[in-house]
Image (cartoon, helix red, strand yellow):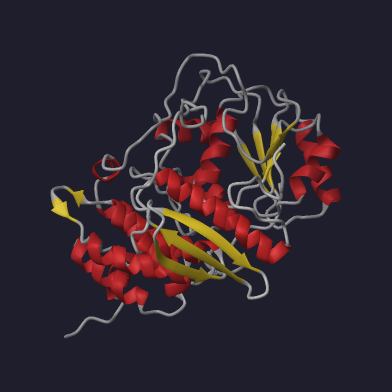
Length: 392
């Protein structure tokens, strides 16, 4: 009997995960035939994960066909997420991560950082993780997360600078939560994490970062890093250890006020927990190893792309950007037209007109400037700073 288009994901979601990579590849093709998925960034991200893995446990991944689909999705991409429930690409992403040995998958992707480990060294700089947050009184026992209410952190900070250690928002159920955990466990003074604001999802299947934080506190993570009980799209913590999660669970009490956006109510709750004067956590001092920061530098010499160069010509009256593609001896090879930067550079990459990474980065920057000229009338001259018309 012929299998229904997405029976594989039904098998996966029912708990039976004895699937082959060929079956997953087949499902990816079927998902690509769903119109809304073919324009979605979630699908593009999942296809990238799939094509990044070349071999698992000695078994080849069928990446060639997935790459073709991915190029089509990238070319047609119109949005990042519609909050679809279910989200088939997210299910595939989670299935890939759970189906294979994590170390076998990750060792094929170059890593430039180190994993998080416990240490007895003192943290010299806090917060240890960078992000969009406000730091108040580092000795306070209160940390605040406003989830997807991105306008609240600054307002809360202005009113309660001395009463809170840190306040910020969190829109994702993976990297965002990792940053929260690392910043909290490296400051033993923090004993309360208050969740305010709107959770992502709005009743649909979204990231649900608030629900994921509550699940993390109650249930922890599985051996492969999945937050047990989290309902978001990709609730995997891939950059933090189980030991550090246990520290987080022991150190902080979570105050669940998800959905509260009233500043007056928020202020009252912060006052209550600030005045509890709870003593600092008595466990071992913890530090979190972080990636070494590499200072950016200009190239010592310019390396020409052997494939040629591009002349970018935005035409405001037509609302189009024309890109002339030349060989290095000045012969015009092709002209590409489009209305936005992304579709043009995807087309150039797909056609193989570019071969050097820094040339691709340069092209993306210049095309974005040309798009700004069409949309906002910001002056454009190729190779000049944005809006800069003359040399200094």
